[in-house]
Length: 276
Length: 308
Image (cartoon, rainbow over all chains, first blue to last red; front, side, top):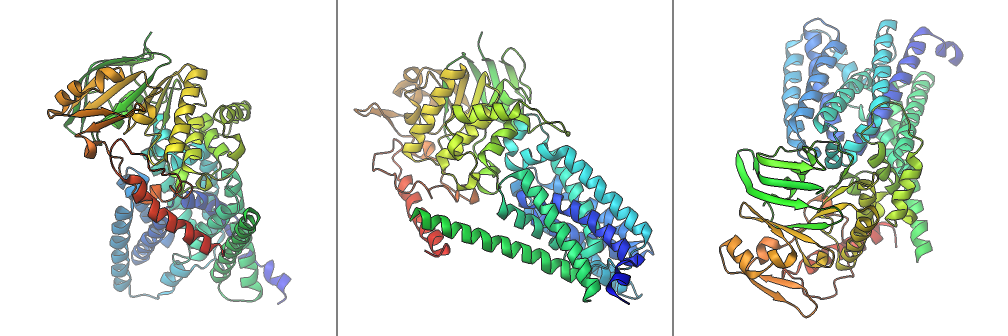
């Protein structure tokens, strides 16, 4: 079968639509994750989701149901737990550990084939059904819509919580809203790259974008663009060369971050030379 | 009409009485320094004026209204901001958030650009407004933050420790800017501070908060041996230096600047390590020297990282 034949098969088409929607949502939400220094929360939510998915499989339900319930629950718990951005680490850590413990229990109770567990951990985008694509795309577009409507207040509380509160914004309300967006984005990103590689779409593109520009709106669009490019080429390479798509996406997103850092170092060296 | 009036006000946080029997007024175009030890309730007073914390007893009016959040006639500058150290953002963007940051939705206000440009020009920040905040000096960041909180030309401007963690030269610069903002906008300014001396040339009125009490008056009425000794219940001596600086003997610990801690201040000093000129601090501490050694190492480490 030629490359062209491969690319037009329905399972590659499904995957293409899914990664497009997810990459855009993850790039946008990821920008705020990096801005708010909440990568640890994103990490924890993914792992909590693993417990949810394992529990759903044990009960004979679709893993995505368990993912949604557990990720949203963890997001709201983390959002409620800390009143300010500074004191959340302990809450996140305890939530993470408790959920991982549950996940271990669920897997040990489940006697069936471990394939479901594997795809939750490492992603399994090739082979998704139209129904799953529709759900993932709808969730992603919903996240994008909410981000576009709340962009300014989210940015404001992220960079000056006290001033934002004095201007009448609810820091707790926005924190809960953001954690919900992060939870849903994590769920859809897990469909593509899995729990363990969720940072490849959620943190790496945004971190690269933040190194490349100091303009918030520009950084958010750049983050979405980098996530999209990593996802598209990752899918293409996975189909063309072989190997897990999630590996290719992770490799490309990490490469983008590495190149951004190298470019920033060159810029810094050049400017110090000018000063000297 | 007074910008702010407080009658027999009391602050209670978590069941604990912070201060009570506070009565004072703040007039338009005046500068009020709020002084007192850490934890005495200086920031709580700002929170009450902002409507973030309710007044437990008494009455307060801000511009004729009961304090409420989101009052555009009240400007506020927080002591620490995530934008300064962690977030990557230009000064222009940060000032822009002062304009439309609280607004939800897709709309875009065409006047924003011009309003932000004017705020930057007034605060003398135009030349570095397009650099990321974390690359600026402490003084430059405070100027940007002042532009952020005065975008709407507020009638009451609340500044929480605008001089903390700045060297003497930058402190003088910010004090001049506060005076300029007061003169051009006619706003009443309330400045929370640890040290009266840098502000003494522009201050019209002092609120001294300590031991659950609030004393209000001119500098001479409040910062004298009789009032402070009575307030603290212990003998306080005040030495006035030939240049007019007040050294308060007996309150050195209470009035010391909080030592820099955590990541909030990790970039401070990078641009200011050469300015401790050996002048005696009124509170008798050698904070400048404490801050100097590590910041110098920081500087060296940074240069090494850049391959110099």
